[in-house]
Amino acid sequence: MKYSIIIVIGAFLLTMGFMPAKKQPAQLLVAISTHWAGGIVGRSGTNYTIQLNAKAKQQITIDKIWIKDEGTFALTTEEGKDAFYTVKKENSSATYTVMVKTLHNNGTNLPGSEEEKMRDLKNPFAVSGEAVISYTCCKKQYYLPIAGFKEQGAVHYE
View (cartoon, rainbow, N blue to C red):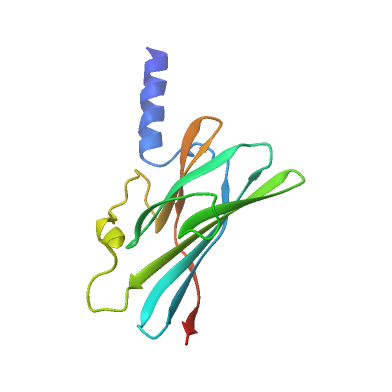
């Protein structure tokens, strides 16, 4: 009886946000967005850079990122793709850099590419924020919310 009361009180406090959530293996260092525009056809978009820090011994695989008003992107380790990440390990820590490039306008008055039209803009994760990163560590799934992006000055290409 005594333990069931403790469990009920603990569950209530957890749902009300009074108890800390499960500790994340990765911590957010910085989240930056840079708007860009340029080219003869008047294209524009946003580049997102997110850096995470973790212990080097942890094996982390970043799966997806959802960005508000942009959609969900599957991430790869292949640099140069529209959504990828890199890992830099030094001593006992590892820095994960996630890069996402979006195109808001393909140079016409029509909506973006077919891929953009098919991208679901709804947040698929049960965590809120301006963005959410889904990653795996030690065979467990984690969702890291990003409250907002620090906006860097816009870049204009000729």
